[in-house]
Image 1 (cartoon, rainbow, N blue to C red):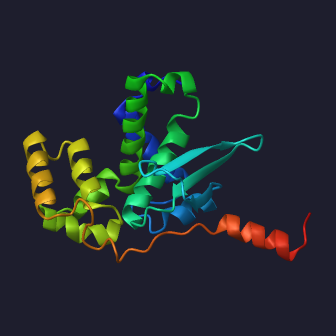
Image 2 (spheres, rainbow, N blue to C red; image 1 turned 90 degrees about the vertical axis):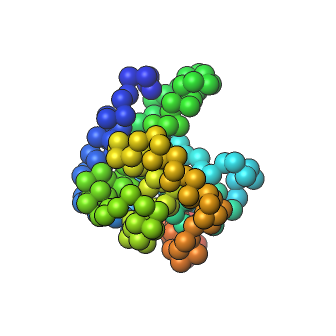
Amino acid sequence: SDPNALSMEEVEQASAKLREFWKLGEGPIVNLVRTMENNGTIILRHPLDAETLDAVSGWAEPEGLPYVLLNSAKSCSVRSRLDLAHELGHMVLHRNVTETTLNKGELFAMVETQAFRFGASFLLPEEPFLDDLHSLSLDALKVLKRKWRVSIAMMIERLKHLGVIDAEQHRRLRINYVGRKWTRQEPFDDEIPIEEPTVLAAAFQLIVSENIH
């Protein structure tokens, strides 16, 4: 209930424990939407009528079912995957954080940082990611993008999280990233397909086909 009591080390541990609990191993998660649906999360893509709102999540009561609404206006798969992993972080870490707490600016920022760190850790576990990385260059990160299905921008931040690069190296990578005009579209963005939810649609089809009232 108190985000101040949660360290970044504990956030990383929580993501690793969830991977273990869901028996995902340490490799890339090929389809995060399917993984979360298979583990009980209701996911829907829908216009959220807000350019700055990427996704929302919560718990449907009284059933206590976790749900995520993804902004269907976002057409980049790797960025949408991080949005989903970010919301998963909120559901795992912050279920008991009250709205009163979230209304405090500094705590809201902390909660968002923790959820981002969880999502990055969940999609890019430290050891296997670093084992794959052979140089600290944009071209090396570009090679890994297809395998791990995460953005190059997120990999840069992950390297900073893990202390692999310092502030100056991070700054240079970001400058080169902007210089390649990757802020709007990265390489392979148009090759990695959007992950579409299927469980809710299948449930509705079953209701209709079985004439359930």
